[in-house]
Amino acid sequence: HDNRRDPLTGLLNRQAFYDDCLMFDKNISAVASLDMNGLKELNDGKGHLAGDEALTRIGECIMEAIDKDTQAYRTGGDEFLLLFFHDQEERIIKIGKQIKENVIRSGYHISVGYAMRAKDTELETAISESDQRMYADKARYYQESGRERRRR
Image (tube, rainbow, N blue to C red; front, side, top):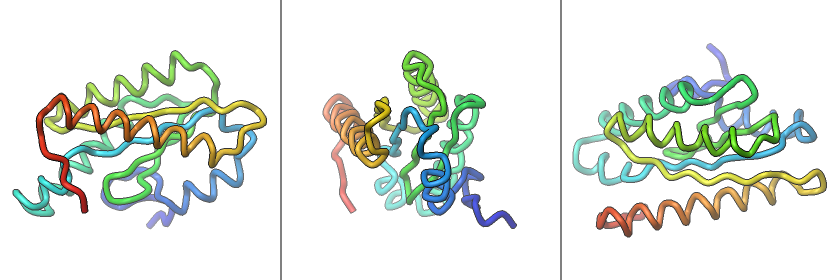
């Protein structure tokens, strides 16, 4: 049993994220925040097993898209974070788009935001900026899809 792994998705877990942020702080050049759209609706309508299947598939979609310089974590229910160990913004954008495309092909939806990190920027600041962009992407998704956004 690997206590750094999320048992559902196989991605690294929240504790691994915290540990890696401390250990590799100076090497992290960007972050991405990802959040599944519609998990509560799926759980309420089809049951938690269907939600678990969706999260498992999203974990696979993330792993299919990232590269050797990127680390993926499931940090909460339907929340994921990526740490990037390179500063090539085009690659980061491409990975985010690839994850979204993979997830859509799987029948689900995910919102993505990212932030580049300047050398003097605290990691928490970059994560906050990434989260803000992800929430803006989520708002666009719900507005464009016409679906009701259900909060927990």
